[in-house]
Length: 377
Image (cartoon, rainbow, N blue to C red; front, side, top):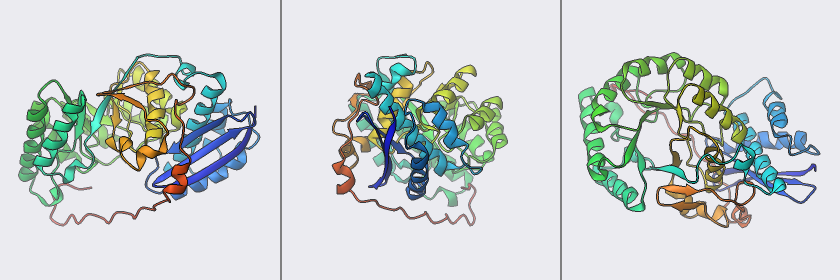
């Protein structure tokens, strides 16, 4: 079997790849590099020239060829590698007529626990946070994730920042009770000193994890935060190689690894990151919010690893236009996804989606005015 055709598509806000073998089998993949999907698409087009005529089942060989194909490695390249890797696992599962997780060692679990992503909750009022938390509880989620920072927090005094964050967190905890876990997402909005002090204020709410409190650039700064807080630290959605995760784990900087299957090298590489985390007794909480296709790919990974904690889940997967990408939705039952027994990723892409939803290029966000701010981006 050989790769006959590699097609790339920009549709909606997505960068997609379709790999067709000479056997007629097709694999689909997607990048989670949502900042500049056009850049990822350009890389995918270059990768297509290498992949033409190759054996699609030599997945890891192709992974390393693409990873080492340039002296410059960044998120656009890793997003493209991720998309190709996911498509090849989809194709391989179809070739062997088994779910991809069976090729990864088989099931570790019969259902995948989710945490409900309360979207951009930093812009929400307390009433809106309560509404979202109530929805999560009614839907049967056993975990959710909230951003406790209030809108405009950059210009608040430290005391105001902490006071308002505590009030927001208290409202969510009161709404869901103690039977639902709450992950705390800071969106890399604080400097280490503020992150450490805020963590002290939030301990009483027993968060499942304290995520991305500072910018992702310094491993030592992450370790500094971890040494001084009493909350489990979750990091990883902006990191995309096993080397970065090894450095974080070696510094005892994280308790939960948060790679994204569409950015951190696809199924092949994320399973390796999970194994690294396992060796340090760390859990895995995959980052995931782009599309139902990437949700399906993430489900394949976490079904097959022993240290899965929760998988991020956004209700956008079930709403137009995102839900139109697949002909059949993933099987969410309450706060869990039941892994499909269908071959590959267990999905079928609706190709009409591509024509129906032209690509929408995003606009880079303007910098935040931090004059007089205590906290910083």
